[in-house]
Length: 119
Image 1: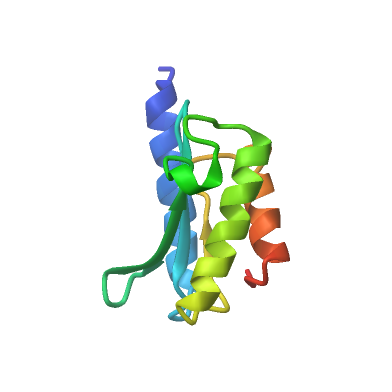
Image 2 (image 1 turned 90 degrees about the vertical axis):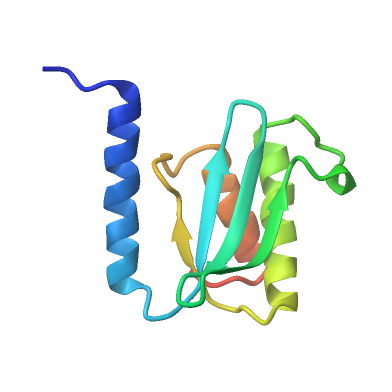
């Protein structure tokens, strides 16, 4: 029985999240969501259930509204690093969700690392 694409995505997402829970050691989680038109990222404190920082291509400040490409992802990665540092976060665990670590997700992660976040 072949699994549907969405079911495979959910399995990957849960597998990644369970591994992160085991190794997080109280660090905030940087969660990435990618749609067909936008990309967004949040730094979440799971212990308190609070979002510490967020960035998205839906924000008009970046000039990439409605774009979901590698350049937009790099801008979002740099912005989340800056906002997380402003919120006092230096180290995070990277939650790629069910998305593969390639292309836009990788560009976002690399830009966040260059911005000073450690993961």
